[in-house]
Image (cartoon, rainbow, N blue to C red):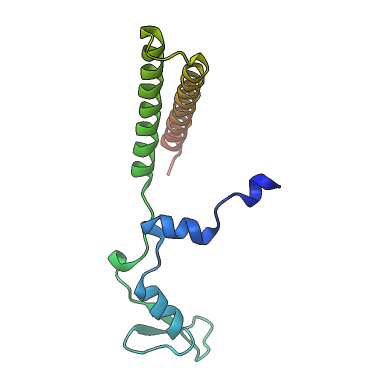
Length: 139
């Protein structure tokens, strides 16, 4: 129960990530959702034949809230694995040269780097497998 209560709240996470910050246009759209401003939206007749109209948001794609793409996320993942490997190598080198006597820390860092590398290899294998499956599909 303590582990769950120590997790950050959604508001904390939103404040930490600038890509997830809502913008002023989203706030304006939320305020105007009660009474639609004709200059900000288009009226589109519904398909059911009713005279009700639906507002379409004309916010440009650059003004919308965006999340990092898959390539950026995967690049950060690979860089993180590389950083763990470098830290592990430094800890091991310090232990061998006598600059450190903390065997436990060196072993933990080495295992952490190994697990991260194995995870990266498995993610790569799944991506390649998915790509091959997509290529086998007939359109």
